[in-house]
Image 1 (tube, rainbow, N blue to C red):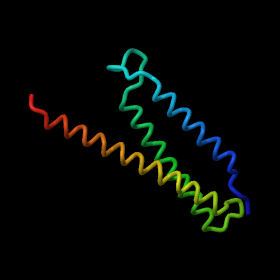
Image 2 (image 1 turned 90 degrees about the vertical axis):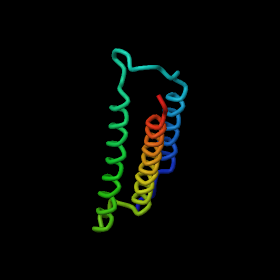
Image 3 (image 1 turned 90 degrees about the horizontal axis):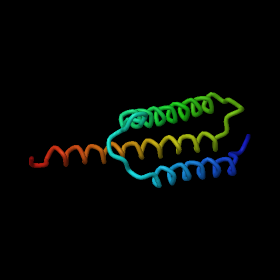
Image 4 (image 1 turned 180 degrees about the horizontal axis):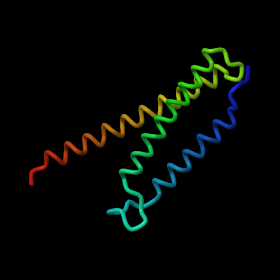
Length: 109
């Protein structure tokens, strides 16, 4: 039975935090300029990443249930939690976007 590499997990968390800080430090820009990335693409990529995390966690859980000796319970639980947290974050983003859309639609012109 192998254990989860805590240092590797902490390293991944620090990398994600650094990326989030870098994105937060960038000034907000107006419309997408030539060579920029569309909001639609960013949102689509995020949804695909969440889906991939969920599929990986499901595959790992299935392998553990089938008795694969290379899959540890702790590893399965960490992957399931990653998938759960990412899905919850995506739902919150969706809720915020829907709320913003409703606010715009209720504006008087």
